[in-house]
Amino acid sequence: MADPKVVEIAGSLRFLIARLNRQLRQQDDSGLSPSLGAALATIAREGPMTLGALAAAEQVSAPTVTKLVDKLADRLLVVRQVDPNDRRVCRVQLTATGRRRLDAARTRRTEWLASRLGELAPDDLRRVAEAVAVLESIVAPTPTDTTSASPP
Image 1 (cartoon, rainbow, N blue to C red):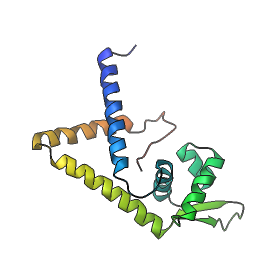
Image 2: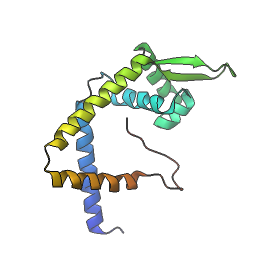
Image 3: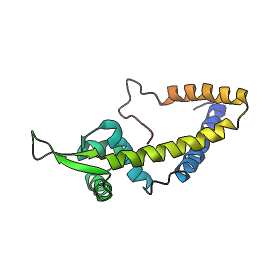
């Protein structure tokens, strides 16, 4: 069984991250649901990708990813392209409008967080920077990981 102190820290950290994530989502004025925003960010990060690859990356079913891509395409944020080597394969790609929408949402959330961090005393800000480095090591993939996580 895990050390009770470690379990307590884990619970506090989980709760804190959930609250911070909620506050960051509230800063998102893109008009996209979290699922649509996450799919758009994955497409931006991975480049043109098949619907199957997007479904795997987002850990959703094929019908769900089709609905997500339909909604993104209806908003002109992505386009579907038929693979020239295999016409049975369709790839989804970010549009310029999609890139602008994603960048604007990210900028707004980052500016909000930077504003809050800017209110900290210099020593507290240094401690946050050190904690970020430690947290990054927690989420870094290990050789045994079969999944990876990236923020939208």
